[in-house]
Image (cartoon, rainbow, N blue to C red; front, side):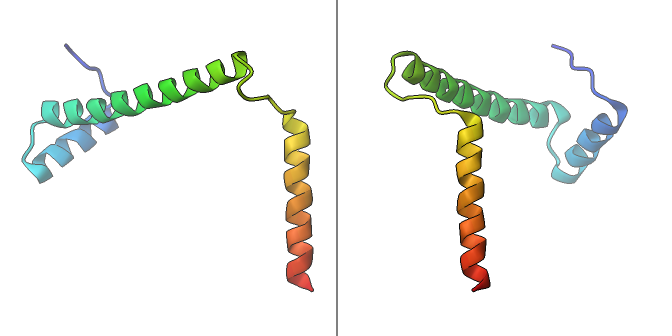
Length: 83
């Protein structure tokens, strides 16, 4: 497989390779393995939450109402700090 990198990113990879003694290919493989693992975990979480919503195990809330309640809580907290 061939990977095209922007020149500045390629230079960073070469610098890191020289500093660590690891090959650029090994560094890329490690980076992608970590990224793929994290992305898989995030997708699983999103899919699970979607299934929870779809099956009514959890209820959705209005986003504006939620943020308004946060703003009110923050205002109350700040008012208590000033006293």
